Length: 144
Image 1 (tube, one colour):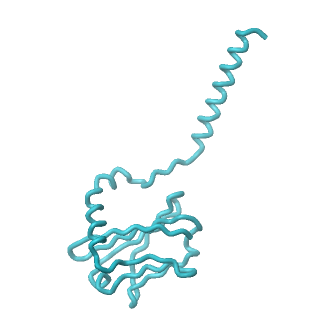
Image 2 (image 1 turned 135 degrees about the vertical axis):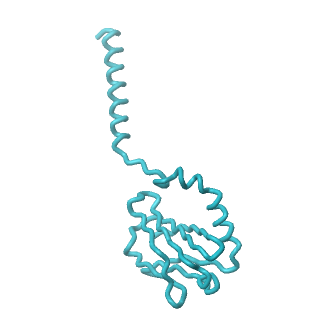
Image 3 (image 1 turned 90 degrees about the vertical axis):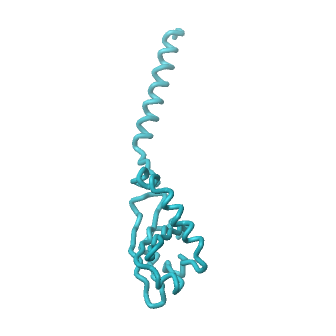
C-alpha cells in the first residue's frame, strides 16, 4: 500500500470515529438544572431576598428523614404566620422524578412524606412559603 492510500484510509477512519462520537453524544438526554432557567435567573434578586429572610428567622423549619418517612417540621411561631407554601423535591440526575407538593401541616406543625414515594439517590428539597409580608426559601440535600 502506498502513502496516498494510507492517508485516505486514515482520514476515512478519523471521519468515521468523529461521526460515531457525534451520533453517540446526540443519543444522550442533556437536562438543564431547570426547565425555565432564564425566568428563574431574572428573579435571582427576589430569590436572594427569600433566602435572607429564612436566614434571619430565629427558629427554622427542618426537613429530616425518620425511618421510612421524610418529615417537614415547622416551629409553631413560623407555622402560625404561614399563609401558603410548597415543597419541591428536586432530583438533580433526572427532572422527570421531581415532585412539587403543597404544604399542609398537621396539628403538630409537621408534614410527612413516605420514602417509597421517591427513588433512591440524591434529592434536593426546596421549601418556599409566604407570610403576610415576606417570602422565604430554604434548600437542603437529602440522600435516600
